[in-house]
Length: 262
Image 1 (cartoon, rainbow, N blue to C red):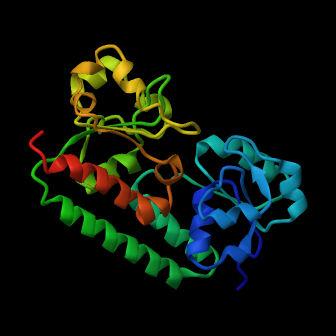
Image 2: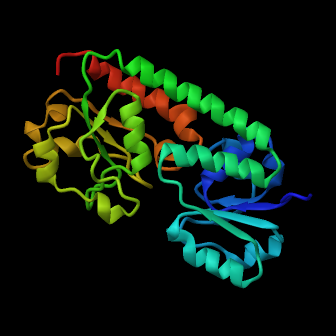
């Protein structure tokens, strides 16, 4: 049996997974937005999220191209039309992310390594769930993925918030499509979160902008200055980064509030 030996990664979670499995040698090209690990930037950069250099990808002669989500369906269609093997996943929850790591492990013949990695992530997740269960309270959290219009978090972030001791105030709005997660300022004010996380996709968060929004002086997170920026490279990709660093970062912030009488 032969396995892929030259893989194009259209998004960064596949890159990080291959590095963690010790198979970065398989990577033939990466997204321009790849950040994890830093050394991944040495690979040819052939793709943005919604567009790719199809001719460059074809010229590299990959035996597998891996992408993520319906947003990349047009890229996938073009590459399939050029005779390439394309694999696109749609993981949206922590469970699906772990399953996707196992699936990638099988695709490259590293199933045992992938299983060991997933088991370590499951153990770490359980540890944070147990630690956060001891908090005095479960703070209400508003996670903002984009500011104009306002978008709250996707399902895997909502699950991460709960695992580290918080409660996503928009847990009923965690759909795969951004428009399903759009919220209004009045909804945010009414939810009155104890914590605000800003994690804007592709640009720095202006932390002082939250206090300037009309009516936000009534929000507890603003009153107590419990407003933090979280890195998109960790929280907005459905891959290992959530377990490697995301759990620790979110727990660190939430526990500061969870043990107060809020």
